Image 1 (spheres, rainbow, N blue to C red):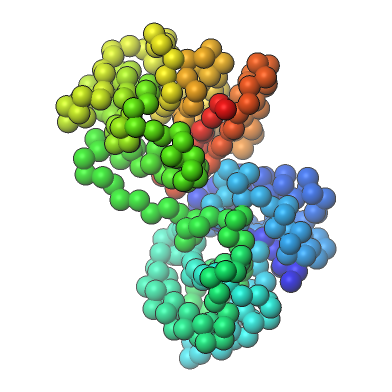
Image 2: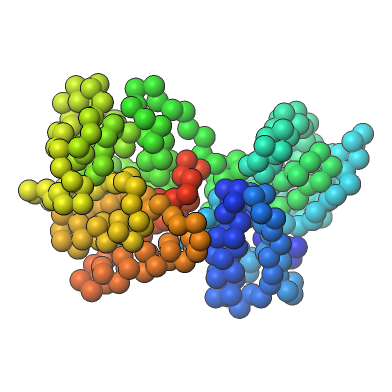
Length: 353
């Protein structure tokens, strides 16, 4: 199979940033091509200038290296005239042409108001389609490929695949989370999504242990602190504002009235977390000082992005952290992702080994 294009999902309005990273990845593997994108659509396509084998394409486009792309797919065909009286027959024919079996099938739409209107259509269509795929022996749980049907409307669909080890495991690339009623603010969902999306299950078990110590800079009212406390981690909450009373009643939080940019702990802690509103490079330098100064082992923080050159700013911040840690010959991991619960910001996790 030689895909028509690589299809990427992103937050509407971030098509340009998603395009920048796919161009960087493909060019580094000598795959030339061009972008087709529409502003605020929530998706874009990278079209290779000459045919590329599926395995080569999949090797070049590394999902875990992407920041602004929620999902990465390889499109076999684009059908733009599905008949309303029988959509399944032409779909099955196109799917069988791929000569693959699939671990699962996702029916998806753009993350836009127009796309949401198709959600009921996808739900109704999913069961009869899956039954047909199973009867054709196209669904095999041991398969390494996942089938995606990306609908722009009820008659236009991208037929695509993703490798289960090189893609998001979530429908539309969005991890659906429920807001916990006990949490003091909705910002808690940012940190929950970061942990569950950017850390593997083994990493979560290793890096988020009961009894660890953390500092939350700009903690008030405690949305991020709540996530740590919920995992049995003791937190020093640094802020001049008031923390949530129920959170303080847990006995796991120490409230310290101080400037988040000046505070340093008396003893090193495991985690530094920060969701303060400040220029991205200002936050980057602060986080790096904690890491290089031995004040913490791990850090998770958000970078509020400028209106222009957002991709360039994120790369500049990432390169700064790497350069400073390299000076000390540190072994580390840097993970950056534009999460569903992020808006004009990205979330960064730095882990010192």
